Amino acid sequence: MTKIGYFPGCSLNGTAKEYDLSLQAIARFADVELVELADWNCCGATAAHSLNSTLAVALPARNLAIAESMGFDEILVPCAACYSRLAQSRHEIKSDEKYRTKIPQLIEMDIKGTANPITVLDFINKYVLGKLKDNLSNKLNAKFACYYGCLLTRPEHLSTIERREDPLVMEQIVQLVGGMAIDWAFKVECCGAGLSVVRTDIIGKLCAKILDDANSRGADAIVVACPMCHSNLDMRRNEINKNLASANTLPIIYITQLLGLALGIEPNKLGFDKHFVSTGKFLHKLQKQTMEV
Image (cartoon, rainbow, N blue to C red):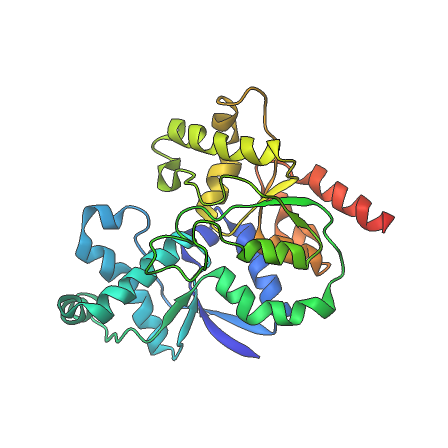
């Protein structure tokens, strides 16, 4: 069994529990053990970098240092915001002598920047897809809008995704499990990110455009790979619907949940019962189509 470091961050321990459940499920399928970093701390997303530039490097650097001390050269960071902070911190430490000297003093730990953060899409491509083809239990005959948001594709020096303005990584996964990835206009547009608590009015306006476009093109669900995007599109639906002509009921599902369904894992074990917007109609459609096949 392969072991890699795992930084769940604050979201996957709380509001995005379904992300953690489904990620752990597909990791077990891929024979990968996700070893949670010992005594990890909040990485500072989303506000630290706007308040204190040194703290914004030091907070995630401590997690990188923990991973190094545990012997990991890779850390799976499923939250796009957390990934951005850890990857940026590693970049600063490796490229800036000031941080390379100052950060170990602040965190009271040695750090060399050898532990490399990877996104959930990196993880799926490296560890899961090669084992997926011969183990599919269900073909997900539905239309999906693949939503990347901001932090998986930006900034350029941190992104591991090709075609950053029109990525196809999730689309390829959707097609592999039998689904259809729609062509749409908002796959890399911002959902409002960290404004989810303080400016729900802005979240409502931004996410309404995303949901309206996906719905108008016939999507059965929107697929995401970030808990902040999921939270804004799922939890803030009341605020979103104020900006739409009629209520939008499109479910928001994680790419890990999608893979779990394709592998035949029960929906409740993937956290489908934990969404704010009901996934019942979507799951019923998939079940009916599977039975018909």
